[in-house]
Image (cartoon, rainbow over all chains, first blue to last red; front, top):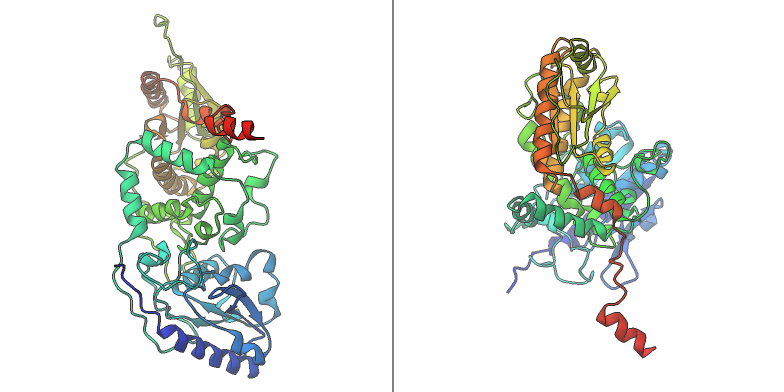
Length: 306
Length: 166
């Protein structure tokens, strides 16, 4: 019998979001709201942008609201925040991503109206959207979540999510891999990376991959092979993990969108764990202008340097 | 004057990414002082260790390096004030990532060699060369480059059966 997770508050949360959206849109506080709406498949949800107070009723929050909407405010959508204040519905993990983007001067807090969601968890990407949320069907990232209640938002519904202690899936998997020999680990990742088809969905969905030109797309000089073959795949995933080290907020969107089910967030979690140990840094709700890899202290560990 | 030449079965390729202000000058000092050190090392000069992107190390391994050395100014001596402090953090993180992916960290050496430390340069290069020589060639990345995406096996039982049914 798997442990069911209580999501009864989501109905009240949806209602509160609708009320607030209605209020701020009709009061003209924001020009648009990015949120979730019901999609065509039963129980599923999709991102929606509403600009009209009448559409506020479309906003929902359910266990199928998996997307990190922060991505709609970066990259190709750079002109959107310039249109005026934007409301955005954020789970705790998404808020961490937004805080990271603010720290990197991609967004300004005063451009945003944050509608926080008290979240008990969302469904894993492999699960049908109308499934009951349980310890088995919950997204792996939610098993290690420390951000069920977003902080520092402009509006958060009053409900408190019930969050049972779950088995930490990434921590367990990282511990398993760390216990292997380097050869076994190489074999594991070789197998995983060889599945990659270089669709770059992980890059497109990542709020932090906002470079105008990706290093991996450049061909003069070409640093990473662009063909979907093992050498280039391995290099791409190592470079990706390295560029996200100390920045990744742990929304696990990369892993969710991966059509080949490569455990991408495992690399990100591993780097987050190491940076926590080395420099006591963790992605959180506070806006930090200096991450662990663009700051330094004179006393940093250098036991590995001769 | 010259130490006796030794024949080895395996001569490792060592790529050294060095900063121009300290280690490059240090290596130069080793040369002008006529110190002997293994010729296995290929030196690449960079403005600063802060310029050395982790992707360079990956690229070196992919192109057939058996060992990689990254060397620059001692902390506090950086010509650009803080380049090596940033590099130190970046490489501490990169090492952890490579270790997690399964690369043997014995092949990757970091060092601080100042312009006055010709002797230390000789020592670092000799040690790394001997260490890598004992480990043998680095095959992991080279094998990746030779591999095709799919297994290439076109005579498996399943495929034959499917073919016969056509």
